[in-house]
Length: 236
Ligand SMILES: [Ca+2]
Ligand SMILES: [Ca+2]
Ligand SMILES: [Ca+2]
Ligand SMILES: [Ca+2]
Image 1 (cartoon, rainbow, N blue to C red):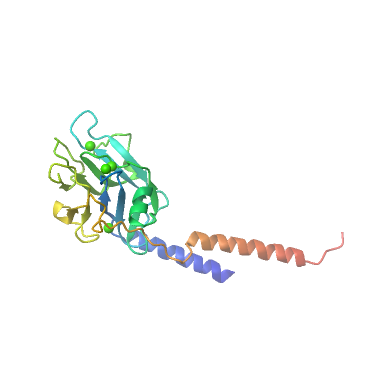
Image 2: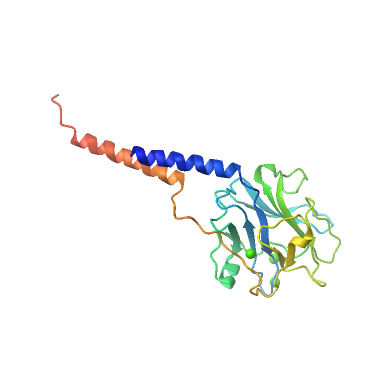
């Protein structure tokens, strides 16, 4: 049993050390407007095992007007991590069916609006209220532009319009390669073709430190109950 616990501690400290040394995860692909009902997804890319626990994805209204800067959609990534394959995927059930993938987390339908928006990966604790303040701690952001007058946030590179339309979305030319310019991006396929590559994060089969610790507690309880059962009864 001691061995199990020591293993759990070692795994725990390794995990902590890895987390602090990691580069920031980035938005790697987003699709928000497609043919028919929108098959929407947001893919992140980062170092395997990076915790997303304190981060949120937000879609910010970017058309000039009354609602400029309003957070139209927000997804808190509590308990989520970058997969062992460096990916993480949030997708609608429609996108899951269209591409034959199982996302790490499901998006509700029409999470991503169909006119100019800024999508950003931010620290959850830095969000205050329902409109962006500009003081958010932003790990990565992308602007998607239609033809109307728009203002994008967080210094995001902007792609679009696509002809006279809002782009279906965008994906990085090379996974994870981020120079904070529009050249990092190509416009997604409106027809849900194979150029769009939503990739779910894969999970390691190694139990998490928490699971091992729980197992240790379980074994300790079992050992204790066995010992009590075998203890010879003492005279009263
Ligand atoms: Ca949409
Ligand atoms: Ca559509
Ligand atoms: Ca908009
Ligand atoms: Ca992809």
